[in-house]
Image (cartoon, rainbow, N blue to C red; front, side):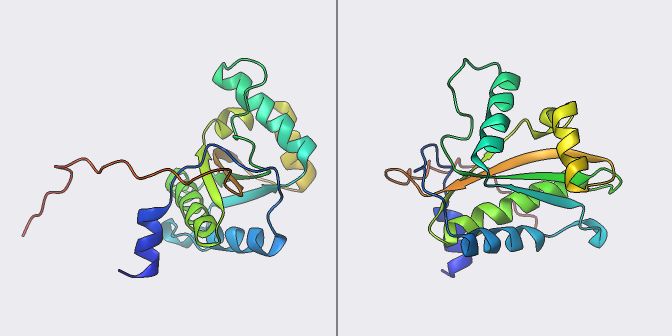
Length: 175
């Protein structure tokens, strides 16, 4: 089986990360993979905010925790030191799908580099707040963007989880 399909079969959502920061070159490759995701009509609606600043990452985690309704002290990013936030330009008809594909590419890229990743929701709600809208403005992001999700990345703490068995009966051939 080829290495891309192997990566798709082997990648797992990781829920425990080491605090060590991955190499910048690896993070750059993950971002690049996200930028090359398939997208509707070539609009390239996805936008990536790469958060490696611990203070900003922790503030984001706290808001995400509050939105989820979890108790104080819960880290929705499972200790991952890097959080890639993916937003997408709402003027593109396919913006949600485009942003989702960006995250999928990033998770596969992280796996291929020996890093773990997990998709975390609630970016939509975060970027509806004044605080995070201000961050976009401070970064020079203009337009009407919606948060699609987060790709939390880092070195895996412990063993990679085994794959759950695939449910049968999910493919129908029309020949």
